[in-house]
Image (cartoon, rainbow, N blue to C red; front, side, top):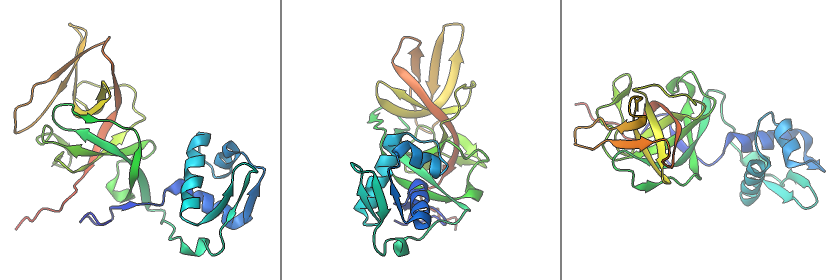
Length: 233
């Protein structure tokens, strides 16, 4: 699906699936190999259920023949000829639901909606652990993330899931009572609380969180890919 942005498309072929197909292209079939062993063979750190998910997807696309009970996996006849493999300059980033830029009112279901294929030139230096959420709302439309780009509703927001320590003033994805929101992280050490602030042309109240509240920080916002191209004329 074209998004009106050069080099950015939603792609149904994940890099893990491409690696599995490349492995099968060399070996033609796998017998007696566990899901964990497949992860090792394709050179990734992944849980068995993730490998199973991608194998199932490949089977549904008619690209492989899958018999998990007997641990037999092989290429479907003519399947490999259907695959346009990605160039090394492109990265497939998982798109995980939507995150609210307003009141925390959208459920943060952690399922992959698709994959955003993006040129490496459009990504920050840290590429491991990146995922994408789709912004919904205008509460961060004054917050500059990179090169003057702000977060507007519908934008693809790049999130670094590897970051575990957050600094005052960083923009984060927070999940509160099962709801996701994008806000500026503030530490109020004196009162032992976290404040999540908006930065918007509209008025939004901050969110106050104490240690005992049910919440988690799911990553730091490190970039924005604009969903639409604006006419500057």
